Length: 252
Figure 1 (cartoon, rainbow, N blue to C red):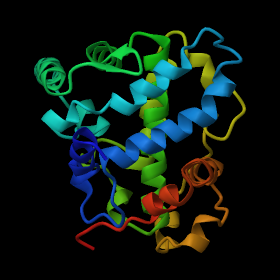
Figure 2 (figure 1 turned 90 degrees about the horizontal axis):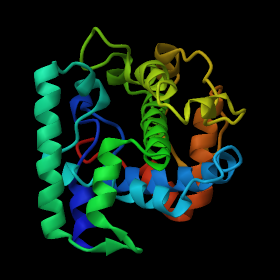
Figure 3 (figure 1 turned 60 degrees about the vertical axis):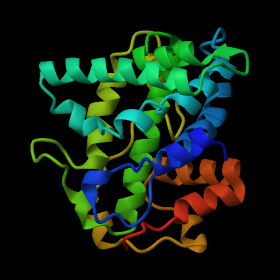
Figure 4 (figure 1 turned 180 degrees about the horizontal axis):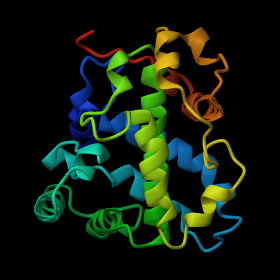
């Protein structure tokens, strides 16, 4: 593990939902995002033949590098920001890019590190939009993973004006994806990860929740998205994927 990856591992996700039952750090999230993209890109390529798959994977690997500098900021937090706060965040992100380029300068598999950071941040290209879409899907999967373990904290969001984390990613994030010109039709593909999820009864799932184990990870739930999300991580990630899904939160 290089120094950059060690820094990513130190950035924790879902920090406003303590106590968490499982650990979610940015490095593990990045690995899961890559595995999900490896699963989905051959399907996406059928309707987007010009997609640069290699660059899409690289964007996934570096998309959260700025959080080494500014820490993790959830989509729910961003949703509650004023225009001024969003403008300030954009400035902070641009400054973070410059700091990262000075520290980890150079290229990644032939691509400029600076250009990759800017492309991931701006989300203007098809590759960046697709990466961002699947990024939201992994957050959705993490939220489902927590409620299936019985975490009552996930029955509401950090701000009561927003739906719980599961339904936040199911509803608000998918609306944003549908607004992304050039990739919006991908959500019409009949695939467990891409298609519209069924109704999710969060409180009921939490009540029936249980701690995850190697055996329970293989069990089918009533949620097709969650079943496939787990399957991809286990099949693509192997033992490392299993360990990520079973990684207990340190303060438990």
